[in-house]
Amino acid sequence: MRTIIECVPNVSEGRDSRVIDEIAGAVRRVSGVRLLDVSSDTSHNRSVLTFVGDAPAVKAGVLALFEAALPRIDLRTHRGEHPRMGAVDVVPFIPIRGSSVDECVGLSKDVGAEVARRFGVPVFLYEESASSEGRRNLADVRKGQFEGLAEKMKDARWRPDFGPGEPHPSAGAVAMGARAFLIAYNINLGTKSLAVADRIAKAIRHLSGGFRYVKAMGVELADRGLVQVSINMTNYRRTPLHRVFECVRSEADRHGVPIVGSEIVGLTPAEALYMAAEHYLRLEGFSAEQVLETKLLEE
Amino acid sequence: MRTIIECVPNVSEGRDSRVIDEIAGAVRRVSGVRLLDVSSDTSHNRSVLTFVGDAPAVKAGVLALFEAALPRIDLRTHRGEHPRMGAVDVVPFIPIRGSSVDECVGLSKDVGAEVARRFGVPVFLYEESASSEGRRNLADVRKGQFEGLAEKMKDARWRPDFGPGEPHPSAGAVAMGARAFLIAYNINLGTKSLAVADRIAKAIRHLSGGFRYVKAMGVELADRGLVQVSINMTNYRRTPLHRVFECVRSEADRHGVPIVGSEIVGLTPAEALYMAAEHYLRLEGFSAEQVLETKLLEE
Image 1 (cartoon, chains in turn orange, blue):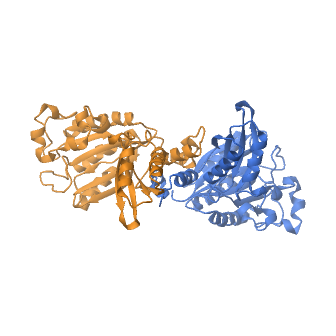
Image 2 (spheres, chains in turn brown, yellow):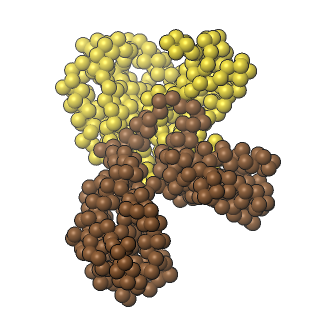
């Protein structure tokens, strides 16, 4: 598998395991698709599928997902705590290996056009695929949810990028778009002072002058007697882990505070760790092709 | 593929591409085996196959290799520059993921017993599998080569670990054993003084008091106007890259010499790079299971 694109669709069913299994099964049966995870939340009444493949396989996987989800999920009777506007609510495309965000933008448009044509579901492009700044943020696109969608779409500013100018009766609308892989990364500081963590969070985050692809806040770890800079790395290729780590180290130093450790919460692409090794070991001419496991993933 | 063991058999044919293809094909057809590379050297008249799989698959791969190689290679007429004692000359087993050197020692004995039983080829265990210190070094085991083998084996000290007390008429004998993955790692110094590279090589290598799993020497890089500490990391789990890098940095510092870069020559397991990232980023509770690509390798 030379090219790996991750797709993490969210569907509006998190309670009926038969329905969830049927939808997951439809994706799993697509040739070239590897379904890595299905997580359901009953209070949200929502499930998140994680699958990977190359572009054609991911496209086929999304189409199979719609094929299975649309007859089984009716938003007119759906209740749950999580905001949603569609039976298939949001479909992000994430480049992992051998693909770029730009290529995933192209893929999201290709898949969006086909979903609209085949299923009559309006498609809004968001994040990196957004056709205007006002559509970049998913929360803005989804504002008003399924119940407010018919009214919202009467406004010319909310014409979909693909498909009909009104919601699908039972399936609403879907947001599709490309984004970089998000790494949840926390750095733990040897102090109880939340103020220090907050100051460092401010120093590194984009919002207040820091790195472009960093969101951060200070958090208390009461049980450990520590504080933490809790970070979302929204594009580890452009803003790598080691650069943020070193910046936090320098800022913490200035307060006489040590870094006691850091942690990656959940998944990371191998590349993010290779980049750290490459930086600190000052590797020259390193390529992921030198990693044995990379060869194992090539067919 | 949860468990990955690498097997790198050397066979005594590097000129007849039909024979090499037939042997490689026999290995490739074994279910669960992934043949990653075949490199042939005509002056050595020798080919090196690299394949991976779990223990049962690797065992089946080695048996298929013998099955194909024995009728096609006759050492009585074999000529080449590289020392050899067998048609299948040496079979190393290397733990990559989900396996230890000890488990590979067990595997080498299991496969060795079966090769002796099925093909009547005497098997000498070497490296980590060696039954005595004098058999650890491949060069000692192979000394005298095929031509001297019958005479050598008359000595009770050179009774094989498995199989008959005399060489197979056309296939000689084989050395089998487990060893850790070897990483070829070089560190480049910002000086023209070979003496500095030599002193640092001495400081880090096992032979002269350094790290247990490090072999090293100083090398001149005349075209770049630099010198290099050229290193074989013979067990990156026990002596990791970052520890050697930091030791070289400290020694170079003492001479007022900077490290301008380092390089990995050829392949490395991902784990060696994860360990460096883990060290420098001070990662807590990191597991390779958090790496997306690890999930892709799991079936």
